[in-house]
Amino acid sequence: MGEILGLGITHFPGMAPDPPGPRSLKRTLSDPGLPERYRTPQGWPEQMRAEWSTDEGAAHAIQHRDTVVAGLRRARQTLDAFKPDLMVVWGDDQYENFREDVVPAFTVLAYDEVEVHPWAHQIGARNYWHEPEDVAFRLKGHKAAAKRLATGLLGEDFDVAYAYRPLHQDLGHAFINSVLYLDWDRRGFDYPMVAMPINCYGRGVIAMRGYMASLEHPLAEADMDPPSPSPARCYDLGAACARILAASPWRVALVASSSWSHAFLTAKHYYLYPDTDADRQLYAALESADYAAWRRRSLSQVEDSGQQELLNWFCLMGAMAELNRKPTYSEFIPSHIMNSNKVIATFEP
Image 1 (cartoon, rainbow, N blue to C red):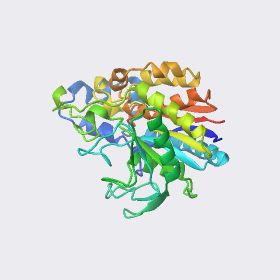
Image 2 (image 1 turned 90 degrees about the vertical axis):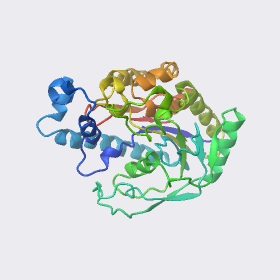
Image 3 (image 1 turned 30 degrees about the horizontal axis):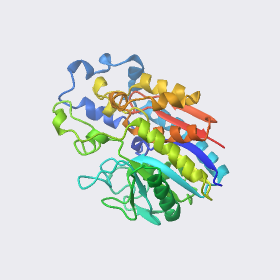
Image 4 (image 1 turned 135 degrees about the vertical axis):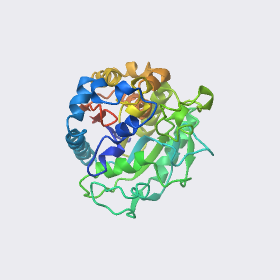
């Protein structure tokens, strides 16, 4: 019988540039549709003003990254101690591999391996490791486990898609960054990965190209796309993944990869800062293993709080509930100006 480790991490792209900074916030501040009272720190929450300080958030950005990296190093230590045969990573495809031709709710990527180019779409951006724009990494897949997982999910009436090769892009940044960040110290990373993209961006995945809306020219309801799968459906799928893989011959790390509420998705805050109150509610439920509170969350609540990417974590919560697993370590890392709050968590056997 297979053994399972649960991990929750972030793939926040803003950690990789050197130096890091509040890029999404600065883009929002330049939006002509932003009300004038929010264009200067005087109109912001107190904590947000403190993070911005007198250096436009430069010091906070570095401190925030250092804290997150410490959590990622701890997650990697836990992963190495567990010695998995493979990882299954739930992440979002943000108008990357899936575009106008097809947007599946859930997909299992049954690749043998894939070559990724993490900096190919960030020409001119200096990254933390000073890796060149044309650097390539080969990431191992685990086709047999992916096929078994897809077969099992279909057998449990989850209509998942599967793929043996990429469509538009090698892998979405959620999956590439998950590996790059778990290997932050570049010691090497040999664990095979089965990527499982979820349509987290739902109503904005095509309409907004998976990124942020314009305050000056907001989209009409008729321009939006069909929705994401519901939090409850993601939760139930995660539980099914745990059952299927627990019955397999492999040691598997189930990984949710995303930050929590995103400023650029939180319309009620004019895309300036995340919904920390909503995040702390779910974090308290995670700490106490009150997974039922997660399953009760509605998609409208998730969208209102800019928590679309948390659908990846709803899968993890369902899996941990299925295994009756409590967190062995968790940390909530807040930030108003760095687009999103971050959580690192481990659920060891």
